[in-house]
Length: 208
Image 1 (tube, rainbow, N blue to C red):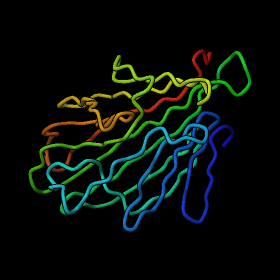
Image 2: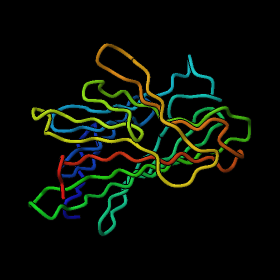
Image 3: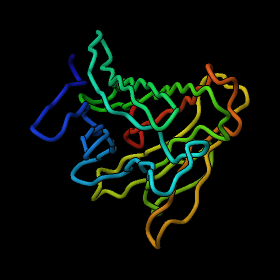
Image 4: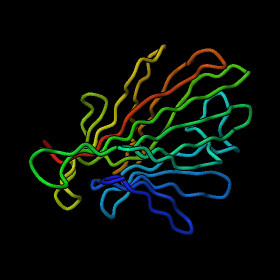
C-alpha cells in the first residue's frame, strides 16, 4: 500500500497517510468518523439523533457496517447503513499524491461518494462535520491554513463530480472556536438515485 496504510485496534479502524488519519469508531449502534491531523482531531462527523431528527432531513448518513478494500494506490472504506426508511452506502477513497521536491511531501485526498435510497420523500441529503474556525477561509468551498504547531498543513473541503441538483457547502458557527460544515443537496432526486460527492484534501503549503 506504500504511503496509505490501515491500522486497527480494539475500538478503532483507520486509514493513515503521511498527512493525516481517517479514523472510524463504532459507537453504540453506528460508525462515526473523524479526520485527524497529527495528534489533533480536525473534523468530526455529526451523527443523527433519533430523538430529534426527522428522517427527511438528517445531519449525516448512518452506517452500521464497515470494511476496507485495498487497491494499488488507494484504500477504500466501504460503509452501509440505515436510518428509518433511508438506506445509505458510502465509499471513502483515500490516496496520497507524492510531491516532486521532498520525500514524504505531497497531498492526501479523501474522495467521499454517498448514495442514499428511500421510498418516501426526503428534503435533503447531507453530511455534517464540526471543524475549527481558526485559519478558515470560505474561498472555493472552504479551506484552512493550520499553524506550524499543527503541522503547517492546508486543509480543504470541496464538491467534485456532476450532481443534479448541485450540492453546496454551508458553514455556521457552532461555538466560539468551532464551525458546523454541512455538505448538502436539497431535494436531491428520485428515491432510488440520491448521491452526495465531496472531497477532503490535506497538503503541505507547497507540496509539489
